[in-house]
Image 1 (tube, helix red, strand yellow):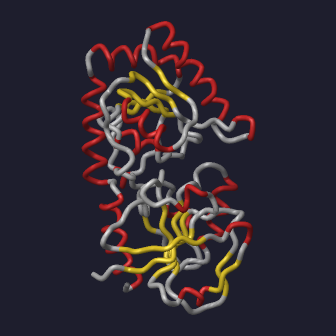
Image 2 (cartoon, one colour):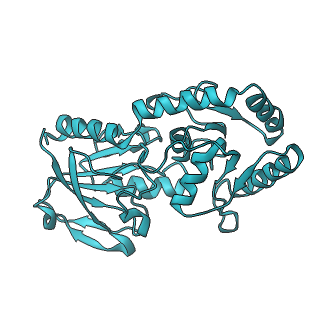
Image 3 (cartoon, one colour):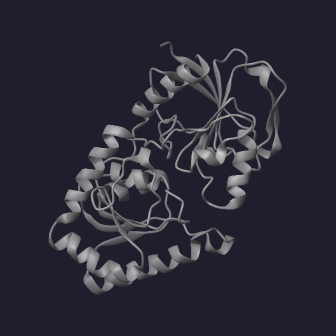
Amino acid sequence: MKSLRVALFVKGTPSGFQREMRNMGYWSYEVPEFTWEHFNLAGGRCEARNRFRDYDLIFLEDLGGNAGTLTGSGGPPVVYLSVDSTLSERHYTDRRNKASMADLILVDHDKPSRFHLDGKRALRLAYCINDHVFKPLEKTLDISFHCGAGASQGQPGGAERVDLRQYLHTLHEIYGYSYRSGSMGLLEYAESMGHSRVIVNWPRTPINRSHRVLDAMACGACLVTGMLPDVPEDKIARDVHYVAFESKEELPYMLESLFSENRWQEVANNGYKLVMENHTWAIRARELREMLSKELGL
């Protein structure tokens, strides 16, 4: 297969235009299957589709309600990928509306059936990690918790995340675990995760599987998380690749077991192996290229 030239439309934020320093795995480093250039439709901008006729593909990455549209006909096929549709009904509606521009609709962890529209069938393209950034480091930190809250902005799960962060700080003081939390830049964030034995996560909604789940595994840490939705293509098994809890009161006993029996290392090893064998950008790029050949004849 030849390398495809892609017009990649991302959210209008600086992180969306990163290459090697991307927090998301998709389009995060060079692969033989694709070359790409970044564009955006931020602020309701519109672009004529035929302007990109020199490209093989237009790829719309998780564009939401503030993004504009592609107009007209002609030009290369359009693919839309939904990532954050499980955060709220608004997130879902925005992404479903944007997906209507596409010839092929791809879905990360939401149910693809929720994106079947106008006779078009949505397919799975699971999340992948930027393994150039997220990787295991010397384990010098017991626990980290870096879930953003956004409680004051009404973000789903925000209040629960604030409460959990404070509770983990209390456990740190009582039991003497080394502990780090808070928001930080990508490199510091990845370094903190890489040094962690245990990474705690709390999903924003019951159907949300954030990319932190796979990033934590890529860092060789034991993921301890609130309940995750079942996404068969992730190939993630509870008590094998991660440990789940339903309430914070379970954590003292769970953490004691993980550390005293060194069980955290077994779970961490399982998660790391799973991610490196199934969920790197290099792997996903090959899968995407094959999918485009089959579905769009590219």
